[in-house]
Image (cartoon, rainbow over the protein chains, first blue to last red):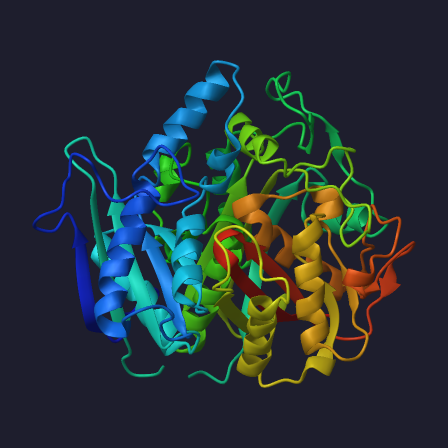
Length: 173
Length: 343
């Protein structure tokens, strides 16, 4: 046996999306204080809020909730801005430092909702849902979280998309 | 669950300190820092111009491939075994490593806990029977975009030195790091005895001042090993030489360890290897325990009352225990602790 065996699939508690009916996709998600120029972090925040609020009401949620953020391309808009600024020999704005890794907005969600489970960011090697749910299953089964908020987010030329899933265990390992 | 330990059976590493685990420790023991003026790209528009870079380094993908090959060879894997061993990769993104990324089972992009999270996940999967053997590889080579970002964020040390836990610490400096390890059941070079991953739930970019998240990660690692804190004879700290971050980590260590435990941060010599830092520092911790010599906390000048720890200063110390901890923390309030046994 040299391959990864499948863990027991976690149980889905709640799901949310961007866009949902009624969303203004041209305007994008609401701005997120502290994050600039790119829709990446606001997308994560809006689907996290939509997923957690029906279950937990107002923050805080339960403490032992982890955050797993799955994104193949990451914050493309910010990364391209930095790449161009460096190529042009210009300085980079300091806020781009703070949003330079997907951890930052995951931590923003965790701070807002009082989540103290693990924070894990992945670039999916297969289907994004599968990657996120397998990571969530491992964190729960290994005892580091009771629930995990899995967020999938991509910025694309044909429209931004994001999805959040709150999942629970599962059998213990 | 298997009663057999999860062990490192092969490893490979490079940093500005050189190639190989022995070279890392040889430079780290006396605190021989590898920082120099950056020649790899233009820093003319930056506040800081120093980093720790290996002179003859090739592309990140080439170095990662070589590291995986070398680690698998040391572990005694056949070509067939290597081909069927899952690869967990810790990198900033796929750019520059696309061929290797296409072969990876998982790609971790969790900033400075990417590699340590990958190790924790791999160890958990092996211990609980979901995998027999996993390769974890991680890499960061200092480049212009991240350098510009850290410079813009005023995170880089303005005096050209990294001074973990020192009252006059002024920030971090970046450094090259590429490493790979083979993890599998049974005895090996070192055991991954326990691991913990937690979040602070405090701030997008700053650690909780009381270090509660990192303390919880340490306690989690000890709990998984079913061991008390007093078995730990060395802590390789995350300490980046950053004001609030080092103080938070010191608070976490004091929360868990009521006696004195020797502490040093080797980022003072090899710099911060970002996504690869957890694996580089794990290898250094293993090598220190195997050789029975603990590296100094370089760059230190002045005690900080907010970092009241048993720092290894002036000269290396002889290891008195088989167990060591390596700690990492990242943006997002992400924390990891890896408990290793070696020596």
